[in-house]
Amino acid sequence: MAEPATPMPTKPEEKAIKRGTEAWLPFESLRAEIDRLFDDFPPNFWSHPLGAGLTRRAPLLSNWAVAPAVDLIEKETNYEMTAELPGMEEKDVEVSVSNGTLTIRGEKQEAKEEKEKEYVLSERRFGSVRRTFKNPEDVKTDDIAATFSKGVLTLTLPKTEEARQNERKIQINTD
Image 1 (tube, rainbow, N blue to C red):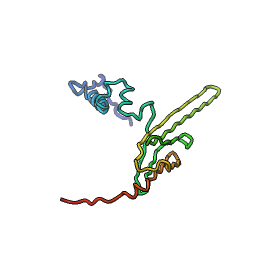
Image 2 (cartoon, rainbow, N blue to C red):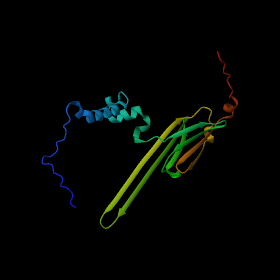
Image 3 (spheres, helix red, strand yellow):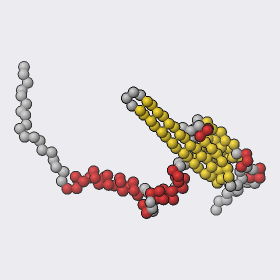
Image 4 (cartoon, rainbow, N blue to C red):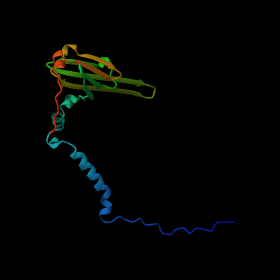
């Protein structure tokens, strides 16, 4: 048995045209997001040339070096510092102590070239990290030790005997 024929519309359907402020809602939302993005910058960021604004606000970004994430834990006999240096190997990392500061530097270079009959692919990557810390006064700088494993640098900064002996508990009183 044949199905009954469905009449075809003779006139194309008209889409409702948005009128008034409803048509602008997507643009208002976009504008609000862009305003929020620019508001996240420091107040005087835009009054300086781009480079000056970046380096003045974040000295660790000067010379385009990136600061690695670091944890510092104080223990009874020493401080333990761990720095994340993903993708780097021991030979890429340098730790130095000078004038009461400890500096961690790392530099990674990688070059890859692929030659095939139809194409040549050449890629180079370069990145450096640097972070400097003021040593606590109670650290024996001559005895600082460093180990490196799986992209994590661990530094042990031993405390002086005097610093360990001078520690005392302070009693907390209530009103």
